[in-house]
Figure (cartoon, rainbow, N blue to C red):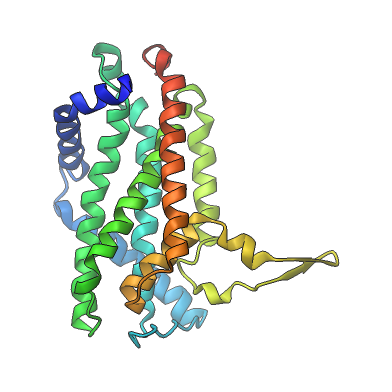
Length: 274
């Protein structure tokens, strides 16, 4: 409770740290915040060329929207994935990157991770706004679904924050963490339905004569549920299954509690180790 009170009492510092992250992200660049739009659009162009043109992956038809566009199908999954990936990478490195500040001034160090994630929330809201405009132009009326999209962004933010808290403090003590996470992110990218429909994943697979329910195991990944929920709302124009939302709430709440607990246990010697 004391740590939570300290955190709330320093909310002005959290705002200033978030603004600092926002101002520094595209500092000394000619295009500035335009890069936050160009990066996902460039990724969509590359993946569309490879998976849609070369590999001939057919985009599913939105149900009930009737939309069929590989680029938009990809964007609906790529935007939340990019937030997840950047959140882990930036959150994990923020304590080491602010080592001098940690050594000089005492404040709840969770604020540094929080501000890094908060600055990315601004970016994902901009990207989703642009995607919303494009969807409207092609006839997908997403406006009534904005509250659900915002709910998903809140859940995904808490999910990422919980993991980033654990990784940030572990990375101070064990610098191998950042290299391991880079590999794990590559695995997660291709084991989540970002560049292909989830219907491509078989329900079962036989390995050495043993039948494995690979579809059920695949769906245990909360990222699969997050990607599916964003696609349900933005691409299909339908409410995600309530069971999936409850699953995401449990994961988010559990990771936030676990992240705060791990951070509290390991932050005592941060100033010496950072």
